[in-house]
Amino acid sequence: MGAGEPTLKQGIAVYAYSANTSMNKTAFYNSDGDFLIVPQGGTLFIRTLFGKMTVAPWEIAIIPRGVKFSVDV
Image (cartoon, rainbow, N blue to C red; front, side):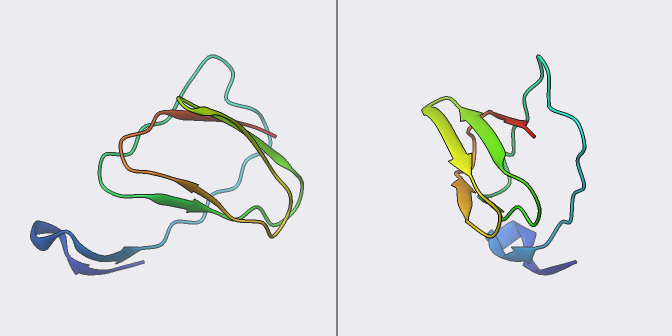
């Protein structure tokens, strides 16, 4: 789902992901915008360039644009 104008860098896009395995030896990078991650079931362990985060269900993690990260479930 999305709304806004990409050339103006205004708007929002919503993505729903489902994961059952960790990102072993891989990383994700988003140059379009910030990521707001809200796990629904189970704790996520997120590694970024700035350190590690533990995110419990229904807590919010924000990954800024341009930051590489990896998620362990």
